[in-house]
Length: 354
Image (tube, rainbow, N blue to C red):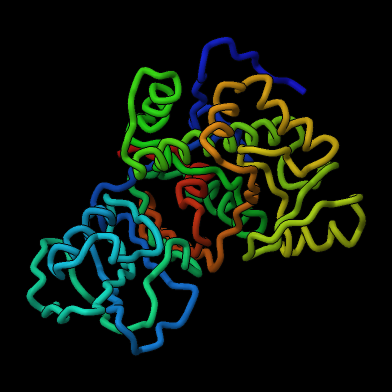
């Protein structure tokens, strides 16, 4: 197994240097020239009952941070921000539609028509008995505009998109996870090495997540280089599609291969934390290489109380549609499960720039 020896404390590895499933893209495209170029529509994983003490608002927001809007809704309602719920963070520089819940117990409901925030529009208003919890998302629908494509890019992009439809892409954590100019990683490094104090719980969570995501991306890249893409390897731990349920594989038989080919199950890689990876054989060796090459990161994540978890390495978009609006403009539309990144798909297709 090939691995670069790391000598510095808390070495940072960047997504830009990670392996590709289908080779580095030949073409580039402009992305996010305006918020309308990146649209996200959230669908919850449960039905809103229509009655209860929690107001559910489906809000269309433009160029607006999710957490900032939650604070504005709390201030407008006269409640603590902890009584405002949302299922997930959405990209700020985009047009997004997502649900927020507001706990009305013991207070008079405000007149939502008086909510006057630029770039904000309430599209639905319903009621439910419980607060909206993080992660309660069935899927996110993405509508993406890519512009300034080369005129000769179309045949290659069609071929790539058809491959992605069938085989998916590596389930990398996207660059958003790591902050502007990878600032979340550099701040995590400063915190872990004692050069920076971090007191806020929310800030700690961001840095811990970024650190563990970096290690996952590194392992996924290493696996692609070592064993190829989209095939089963000895020692797999598989995850059921649409679920976080996992199981170990005893041997790679025809039944397992058939379920893999049908995308009923997906291979996983560990999200580092306390305990031992649940994999065996070759996958276990790959995962344990983190201790040798990223020991500072691994030990710190364990000391901070994180536990071993698993994440699928394969991301298959649902209902992927594409349309070339002219020779140099491409519209994409697809659904992804919660916790995955549209930029993981774009990364395999084109090199994007602002």
